[in-house]
Length: 256
Image (cartoon, rainbow, N blue to C red; front, side, top):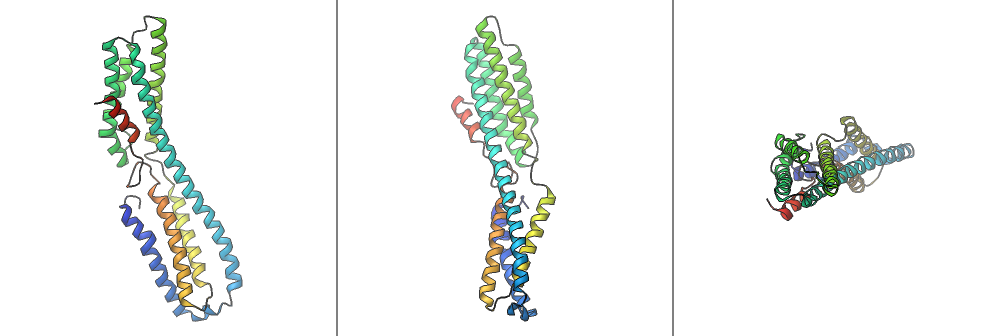
């Protein structure tokens, strides 16, 4: 469902589903008119209170977990950009030809991520060979840095740490590509929504209009929360996704 356009996903969950629930509500009242008398409300009200609370906790948990995962993915991209900036600037301690090589490696890495890897992540592919090739070349260039003085030896260690941070941040970023809520949890959400709305539909109310408004509103609220959870379930895929703004700023600051 997350592969659908965001507008279509919104229409299905927030418009179509509540309208279907309203239609079903009208059919239930026509098929079993005695439900409007409310003789069963005491028992139904007790059960719907318990089921509603359980489902509300589950739905809130899913939305919070999805949002935290989305936020962590954004944070990892920022850390990756910060490490690249440090790698670029610390190279100033080396001779001009060495400095140019390291800085070129940084620009090549960011360019490969933006041009190749970001689109691959959007398709659900964890990584791109072009970025891996740049990392291999950068590792070789850093291994060849001159450590002919105590100061430069210290800078070599700093550059190695910065490079390790870049590799670690990229690895964490790629981990988010295939992460997402397990299918069994989505089954629980759909089943819970059906049970919660079902109990609301059999609750006895004399006014059909009021009953339809209440049930439709409940379905719409659940639809909105499910829409949010589905939209941000995979941080690098879909219309609502993490943007490469921190990496774009690195390239804008240091040029192609």
